[in-house]
Amino acid sequence: MSIQNSDSRASASDGGFLDLWSGVGLVVANMVGAGVFLSAGFMAQELSPGWILTAWGIGGLLAMAGARAYAEAAVMIPRSGGEYRYLSELFHPFLGYLAGWASLLVGFSAPMAVSAFAAAAFASAVFGPSDARIGAAALIAALTVFHAAGLRLSKWTQNGLVIIKGLLILAFVALGLSLGESQWPSWAPPSAPPNLALSFASSLFFVAYAFSGWNAAAYASEEFQAPRRDVPRAMLIGCALVGIAYLLVNWILVVNLSPERAQVVFEYEEARVTLGHLVAQDFLGERGARAMSLGIAALMVSSSSAMLLVGPRVYAEMARDGFLPSFLRGTPGAPPRAAVVLQGTLAIALLYLHSVGELLSNVAGVLVFFSALVAVGLFWARRRRPNLETPRPRALVAAAIYAGSSVWMLYNAFKAQTGLLPWITIAAGAALVGYALSAKRAS
Image (cartoon, rainbow, N blue to C red; front, side):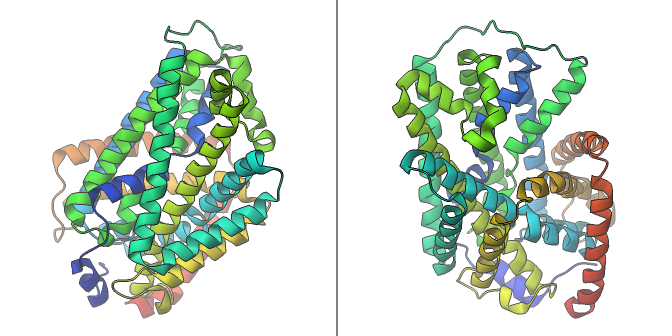
């Protein structure tokens, strides 16, 4: 069963407002957050510098494999919606529907709320104590206005924030390489892991979380001027650039900080201090730490903005197919304003739920599951979807690598959090009921 209606075919033929480098910026903005300045602190408690850098290298390669698989899916199905669209076309609309609801409820709204809260919290460290929730709600409301006002304003708002984010990362790398240590670090982790392989595997979860977002361009494919050409390139180039930046940042962190000092990451929720703060403070004093707080705030603002740009495109696609109310579709030549407002409203609501952090950890495995399904779908399409282009061999190799690594990570995640299975069963059951109620209207 394939969802193809006249509205979506027409929109796919219209010229988009995004070009290649706007797409690269969208990917970078979704990927880069505070995680890269935190993960090494947790990892250094059991892993040596060599193993930490190896984990980041492997994480980058796995992200590139995922991006290559998605690049092939973007060529085969040059339409917006990400997992919702790909799984609907590759397997069955129910799987796409399930992925779409995951995106609506937690895939974008919850991370956006967390990023906005972090931005407000870091800003308050510079400008004085304030209610971070109120600041985050104001930020989300402002971004909602920008992204709902018009395509041009939405594009340049996002591009401007990405430029700021890129300059901040470049400044940190330049500072670290010019003023920091250059010799291979001699420190050892304070506690030798009882099982090095298990500790290394657990560390890859931190790395995988920091690399998430490499598929951002796929959610807004129809907003590109040349989606079949630029969406795959945007994902691959953006992911490669972030991978290089992450390796450089982590080199600076492991050569300039000891595991004992890196333990500050365990107090991140209360103190809002990252490893980047320690390095900046060592080089530039208190002014450096304050500048780092502003930099992290800017990183999180850019991430929130990127999620608000791409997420509503999923809901608009679901509305076009009849799975959500029609007013969420939007109109040609304009952003899907109702969908933008919906996501902004959900994000603000989630700010006032104390379980947001727990919610994110519970659904991380679900989101990995859907992206792995897209990779598996390339093999399914080769045999069962003759109406689609045949995936190329290199893409299938990348898809196999990404799907295999995802299965391994999911196995470890479910093993560590057995309570996740009932939660997923309930969520899938609720989605099945919703699909049954809306499928007849959609068809």
